[in-house]
Image (cartoon, rainbow, N blue to C red):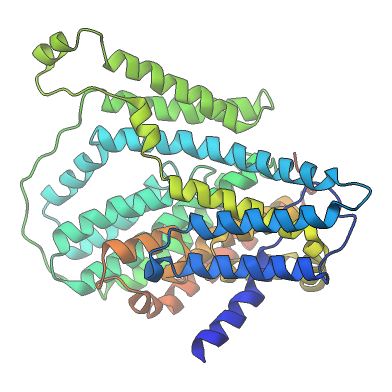
Length: 469
């Protein structure tokens, strides 16, 4: 009975994650058997995504299958219409949306994998462990570092890195590990909310041209608040114990620092391509991939034997290996989400949801509710839905929905990729229930961050709405 209630609730919430279409819908299929079937197929697929931990079915598989079935159903309906090419044009638009997102993320993941292979993150972890800090100091430090690293690296990578430190020094102290993991999840999601590179949702908003690169930094203080409030309230609950110090030293491999520099240069290139040349940021990122490929050639001279003699244990660098190690399940999951949501949008659910949320409730209430929805459903389809609705909102409102979609995922452990990953990495020590116990405190930070944004950035709410690229 509980599962039935949860399923019904999820189906109702999934209605908010609709649509993404390029062209005005000529035929409303929301009450058509095909439209209803498409919605049911998407809901079943997303239920399988949410239960990935229990079914061991990788999340990309059900949504890719659902995307193919949904568009096949739509094509069958339009075959007898006077405009059968409409489906093809719509799916091409959605695929272009995905292609831009795919290539952007692929470059970012390649750089992150290169940094991992050059032992940059291992060196940072070893340095933290050698400091011999107490649990409370480590609790604060891992949270602050998570907040600062996630705007550049994605929040998932940051959370995994910091949780490795916590697990290494926490031992069997479940309370310290649980509280620290909660803190890391909140900090990683908060840090990713004020940077286009920190979260997929902020990246989507930036690529659409709704918020400029510098405008995102208006969310810095609200993001700090969303992290600092729960962190300070949890601090007193952390055991005041000092763990045994470790003297293990890890050294970075040759070229590590230069790869960091190239990554920042790649980010700068993407910003300049978008801001000065008015080109999609993905072209700047692909140019940045060339930086890494050329540097990889430098790290792999033809005379490998001389390099080994001169540099001892230096190992070669293969950039294509870093590309292959990208999180392809996640990248293909995005394909399924974009195409599924795009198909549902083509059916005609856009008008229904837009009128309910942004006309009936108002922009502020609707955008705040987006955060609560993203704590249950992944914030990516939620943000796709908002972008597809194209509500007439000011810059302040677009910043608000960016903030809520980002930090709202911290309310539950299943609300973000960082939380789900840490439940697996700290299995039995950081759980859904242990996170749920502190949800009221996290919600307090969520509310405080919204209030801070409404007060601090009130002028942005008077700026005229921007136009989608």
